[in-house]
Image 1 (cartoon, rainbow, N blue to C red):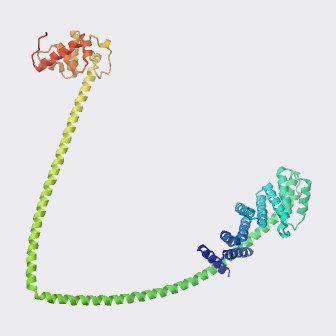
Image 2: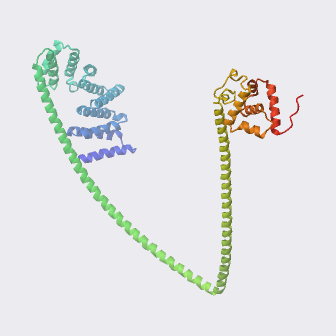
Image 3: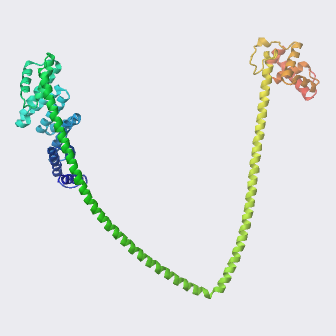
Length: 487
């Protein structure tokens, strides 16, 4: 029976999500009622589920009471399972909702729940605040006594906790706590004994501490027994629900297997019937095609001679076309090979041209490198290091080379250095040009080293114009032309 109620509630929820037009308040109330039944049986898990369903489905004005009652039921279960933060969120939602809709009873119940959570968390000032607010609502609205039962005792315990946090417990409160602790039928006896034991501990006493420990031990023992019984009931309920679900699944499985067997048999029969009809149609089609072929063969038999001649002629033409096609293919292959060969030759020529350019580039680089090496060697010689030539790392100043090569012995030493560094450049120049003097050869060496005319004039103690004229005469000697006489 329990399983059927659960299935009915779930079906109601499914219909609502699919846009069913049934009255929402009815199935919201149904979910809430089933949650209450689960609470009475001690099935906290199912009660929490259906409280959540009821609170989540309440949207219209008719379902407002069920919403806050379901939210309060969730909060109670959270509180019993020591999920204080979740319970606090539920009670705060109820309090805010009740303030907006002026629901005094809901606000009163939410405030008492919040006070219990604050008391459990040790925030006694906040617990006292919630209790005072709930007490003011109860006094204004005149709630019946079953709603306000224990409110005075809770306020006394909250005030005592707040005062003990400050370190002071007035005698009036101590007297009220003693009176509350003396009542063995009171559910708050353990809390009163705890506060009295704390106060007594400050005065170095132990009477109330022993009583508080006894009461706490008894309370925890009862709570453990209650929790064990609740877990046992829930386990038994789970086993009953599992067995009911198993039987229901077996019945459904049997029905499904029967339906599947019927569908399979019908499908097999239908497929066999379709295959038989298809086979008959195929045989009829084959017979019709054979009849047509026989008729065609009978008609063609009359023209077999002319047909044979036409076939032979077509065969001869096809052979000629095949021979022409082979020749065209051979010519195409020959042209393709020649074009491929030409492409290879062109590619080889391009590679050779690239190699030639690379060789010329390497030769130029080698020539430049050789010239740089010879110059650097010359610039390390006694005379060469003082030459104002480009690339001389010593960078001589004007006073270093002023009149450096005026003397004949200096000129001979310079020519000897040029022969040593530039592979007999000076001697070879005089050998191929007999008309050159040693001084002319010195000028040729200057030109070879790219010395500026101004620096040459400084080296030889000449003017720049005389250096230019000397260069013209030397170029005429080297070209073998006659030198004009000076005017």
